[in-house]
Every structure is written in C-alpha cells, then in structure tokens.
Image 1 (cartoon, rainbow, N blue to C red):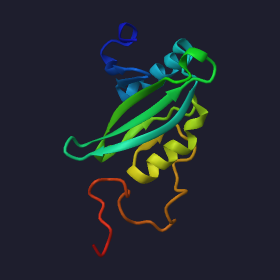
Image 2 (image 1 turned 90 degrees about the vertical axis):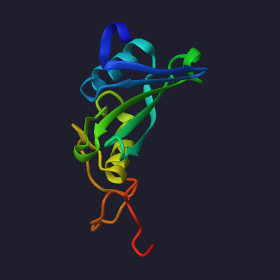
Image 3 (image 1 turned 30 degrees about the vertical axis):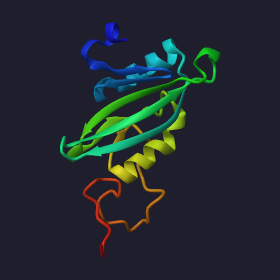
Image 4 (image 1 turned 180 degrees about the horizontal axis):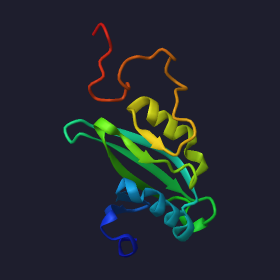
Length: 145
C-alpha cells in the first residue's frame, strides 16, 4: 500500500489481527477504495473520532472488516486520518462504505467534523436547539460544573 500511495499513507502499526494505517484526508477515498477492492475489507464496522486540542487536530478512525473473506473475519484494519480542528473537513466514505452513514453523522455532531459529500451532515442525537460546542471536544464543559 505504501508503494502505491507513497507519502500519503503511513502504517502506524501491525499487530496480531490489527493494522492501523494513517492517510492524508485528500487521499482517504482513493485509499479506502483500494482497501475494499484489493485487500478484501468490504465493510466499515464503525467510525470514531478523537479530539487532540494540543495538536489542533481531530482524528477520525474507520474500523474496517470483512464479511467475504474467511481469512480476514477476525481482522480489523483501522483507516485513520486527521483534520484541522478549527476547520474540520474530510471527504466522506459513504460512497465506498454505505455503513458509515450514521457513524459519520455522529462524528459530525459530537466532534464537529464535516464530511464533504455526505448527504446528511445534520443532527440526530443532540437537541435541535443545541448551541454549544460539540460535546466530545476536550474543551466542552457541562454548564454548572
């Protein structure tokens, strides 16, 4: 994979049944398509995000698995990217993995990451009148505490 995508991809670790790959946001759709079509990871089991305020970044991790290959059933490939915390935009993977629809919406709502190309970057968990910062950002404080 690093041969094909060069500096756009970095393998962070390879452990038993787990691989974590970091990719530049601009290359995430191309890399995810390659992982699906050439490596056999045919679905996204989940997506999550982590706020790194000191780095001024938000990391988004897609946990990819396989239903179609018996040799990959227990494996998870984490496809990771980071966005600028102050203008958090990354391309959506909804056209590669349909199963990311609600995971990306939750990450949008809870961390403020906007997924370019996602048809529904909108609230579905928080109240419609939510006027505070996204609640999973490290600088979020519950009022009254």
